[in-house]
Length: 359
Image (cartoon, rainbow, N blue to C red; front, side):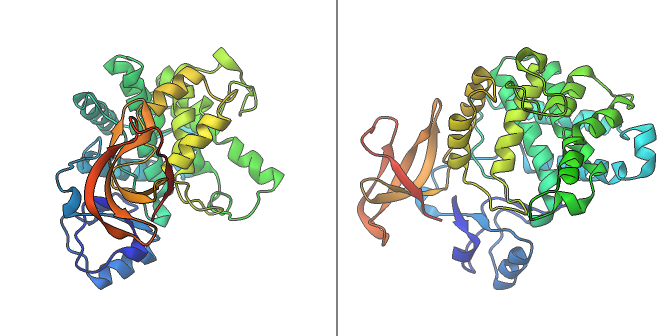
């Protein structure tokens, strides 16, 4: 499969990865042949790229690290929880949780543990209105992936997945006019946003499914080791390790998502920002674990190389996320077909670098 800007997608192309809507419903199934009206509909939803089947890399099979069904069910569950948490009764009785959420996080953890070499390869496709739901699910998946890399046991991973899935539940108490404001926030609006971990923690604490590790994630995921986080300006070991994991994945997923005040950053841009700006903000050991499970250049991205050749990413080298494996297909920026296409491993060709993504 290859990743294409929606503007470059043509009728007749075939969807390679299912597209989910804001309620978790499947808008277009993988294998669907695209029609003009489908493309117009996707544009109205704010979807700006798709994964398309490409016979030139048909030998490269890469699946999402969890199934479409599990991601679909998790999104529906989170949307329902946030909807219920908007009610005045939620602040009194807490989040209305039942065993369904335990089954969901258990399924996420089980699927990740079955995938020994799991690396987050596929860039999530989201509509404009589903940021909070998709973000919550993605953070749960990524946090579980890092937790597995850090050798947490299965039960602890489930508590981490639960806390990450609910980490932004307190945003239900923040007016949508503030959440979706495209301009700069006022001091009062910023204070309201900065209290969402407290709102979420108080709602979760009243639930019969409350657990301290999950609660620490909700309360502390915006704390930073230099003391410049919120709500309590904690430093270093005062911040629970599991909250530090979610702090990193929350930042990464937010950077790679479209927000009202800016476009999404590419995965490699977000990775480079975390590396360059993460010192003194995130625990370096946890950050290194995170970087080992994320693809800075996911499979299907089209990249231009410093030797003026270009092609599609077909693999990621563990430990060398910024130097993937490329199937070289073109020469020059005019994208003339390469006379002899070949695979190039940038981890062993150190004289060649990626200049930019061709979208």
